[in-house]
Every structure is written in C-alpha cells, then in structure tokens.
Image (cartoon, rainbow over all chains, first blue to last red):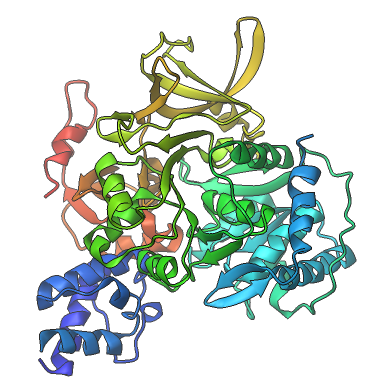
Length: 80
Length: 497
C-alpha cells in the first residue's frame, strides 16, 4: 500500500475515533495537531488501525506511534 | 507525635540530606535530592520575597521537576496547591481558579496560558542553596491542596485537604504492609489532579527513594511497561484499567524487580489481577487499596494473598481501615447495619477532609455527625455500598448514586448532562454508563431529532476533560417513560449497540 493511501485511511480512522468531521494529516503530524487525540483516544485509534490494516503492534512499538510518519513506517513494515 | 512538621517536612528535609541520591527520573533525566532541594529553595525564596495574598495557590501540573519542587516549597511556606491540568480545557481550569479565588499561579511553562494572574515562572528561577529552617507555627488546619472532582450539578467541586489530613495519611500508610526504602524505584503514573499522585510522589520522597514519572505526551501503559523493565521498578500504584490495557501484551512484559504493587482508584477484578501478577510481576506482593479523595487518598488496605482471596462477585475485597480511621456501614435511616449487611460506608478520623471548598450545601449532604455508644463523631458519607464480614474485611459492592469511574477518574453523569443541556437548551439529556469489553463507556441520549453530533461534541470539549466526552451520542425524538412517569433508562439502554 502506498504511503499516500495509508494517510487517507488514517485520516478517516482518526476522524471517526475523535469525532471530527475531517482530519488533515501530513507525515509530520503528531497527536498534538489533532483535537481530541490524546492518550485515551490513542488506544482506540491504535485498535482501529490494527483492525483495518490487519496488523498487530507490539507493546514497545506503541510508544513510537506518536508521529504519523512513524505510524506509516510501521504499518508498511508489518504488512511486508 | 503525628503532625505535618514532624511527619512530613522534617522527613523531607532528612531525605534532602541524601544529596546525590536520585529523587526523580523525568523524561529519562535524573534529578538528585540535592538538585530538587535547590529548586525548592529558589521557589521558597520567591514566595518569601513576594508572598501570595491567599493561602491557596494555582499550580500548573506540568509534571516536571519544577512542578514537584513547587508543591514542596508551597508546603514549607504554609501554602496549598490547586492543580490545574495543562491538557484540560482552559475554561474548566479558569472556573477552578475563580471558585478558589487564587491570584497567584506557579507555572513552569515558558509561556503561560493564564493571563490575568500573578504568574511565577518556576522554571526560570535561579537555583539556591537549600535552607532547612522553616516556619513551624503553621496551623494543622491550613490546607495542603484542593482537588476538584466532577460535580453532579455541572460544576466541579473542590475537596480541601489539610496538613492534619496529610500527616495522618502518611503515618497510617507507613503502618500498612508496604515499607518503602531509599533503594526503591517507584512509579508515579497518576495525573496531579488525582490524589493517588500525592501518595506516588510523597511516600517515596519521605523515604528517600526515586520516583519515575510518565510524561504527558506518552501513552501511559506502554511507557510504564518500558519503565518497569528498563529501570527495574520496585514499587507502584496503578489503576486496574491500566492493567486491563496491558492485558493483550502480558506476554511482552516481565519485571522481576517489582516487589509491591498497589491496585487502586477502581474496583479490582480478581481474574485480571491474578493474571497480571503471575505473568508480569511474579515476585511482587499485591495490595488492594481503597479511598475517596475526601478521606485523603486511601483509607482501607488489603494484602492480596496468593490463595483464598476475599472477593464479592469477582471483585477483590478492600480490606480493613487504615490506622486511625473507622469504617461504618449504615442503612437508609442512618443506623448501623447488622454485621454482614450491605449499606453505605461512612469514614471517620483524621484523614477526613474538613469539607468542600465554599459549598455548605454539599457539606450538609456529605458529612454526618452520629453519636454511637456515647461517642460523637463526624463521618464522611462515601456513597459507596459496602459490607463487612465477621473478620472485619470490607467488600465494595457498588455506588449509591450515578457516579461512575472511567480509567480511575470519578465522573458525575449529571455534570455531563448539565453541559449537554447548555447546548440543547430545549432538550432532555441522559448519560448512561455501560460496560463494553471490560471498559466502562459513556452513552449520551438526547431527546431531539437525529442530527450530526459534531458541534455538540466540539462544545463539550471546550468545558469537559476528554475522559468525560461520551463515546456515542444517540438521538431519540421522545424518551420512553416507565410506569412512574420517569424516563425509562433501561429501555434507553437497549438502544446501545
């Protein structure tokens, strides 16, 4: 899956979880850039990402999932 | 003699003498007791030069070294802190400042989001050599902190905790089975707006141990597991909801150094806690501690045995009262129940708050003076339904009212409903809490035609912390009524998917 396509999918997942109509993300976006994306909703976001991409993150990896770019890196690595 | 000066301040000063011993590990940076005491002195000096007009001072809970130093400096100078969470809506924090009337705020942020206050930027103060002399004449009734918890009428309510309360707590904690030592490495994984944070920093400091904190921008349960393994943590209090979040990853976490683990802030399910113990922290002894903010952090404790654990419906018992406290179960007529019967639990003793901040109505509801076997005592009504068995073990059985807990946070459903009615002024609103896959979720019902809830959620975010935002909004044109003519909450519940 292309990075561009993953970002689109992430945008809809995050918007759905934090209840925003639309979320604009770039590779450099972090939780701080999105209203409602805090440590509580992060867990729901991770669960949604795992479900829609059919992957599973490790406990230690969760700490690295703070930047959209690194989320994409991990998704690609996991899907290989 | 148990008083704030000898039980707290003198002990702290004793720890500061340890100099190069580590006091804090924050964001992977260590701070020694010497460095901590220098930060404290810098803040004390500023407070002495320019004394706040009011005892209660706002404190932005940034969770950095200056925030912790601020608390200790305020206590040494006879002030109380009112924590203001940096991630909670400004409107809510301003409401707290206004309720308290504080004019001074200690803020370690380089640029403060508070404008109309006297701000002391603690991170910019020049360090000073510590002076162990302090004012010993401060009354035991002077406050140490005010914590605001969810209020059913729509406004958060402030719980006052005095120097007497904290001294009694610290003394009683040391009488339980957990004995901290200077070699201990302790977790502090609670928000400073929540009182278990006080136990988590204060008890290690009193014993000269080191405290490991969780930065606000981290995913708590993941970061905690990293700390446990990388720094060989030995002690910590945690909420069962955090353990539940770790559950899918139990195979990835193993920490043999953990020797004492307190479960608190919520009901502890036996199965979850036993799995946590066996798979992740096999060398630890586990404890279930219970206590409302109004009775200063914890007021009962239970050392969880490996076999024959005392439970009620799979929930671990909360043990026996702390030293110096009395637990009493009463019925609807304020009469003590027969042994083993369920009723509301009352707590009396030196850990019980002097009351709510400027709210006599609430005080009248929450405190009661009873004369039993000739003794007159003031009790706090916890709202928790409990029973006590023949051996004196207490069991938690549920709430009397609509207060719920999410991830350990106390939430009055009425406070959320109040803010929804500020948005839909013509409509009724009901919030119900329901368990979903082991986690409690909030469902908001609005008596209104179906529409997009985005604007409503946006408005709620302006005033409520994230953990109070409903997971789902369900519109219903007309609420169903039960035979008493009241909204039928059970029928509403059937609409939850």
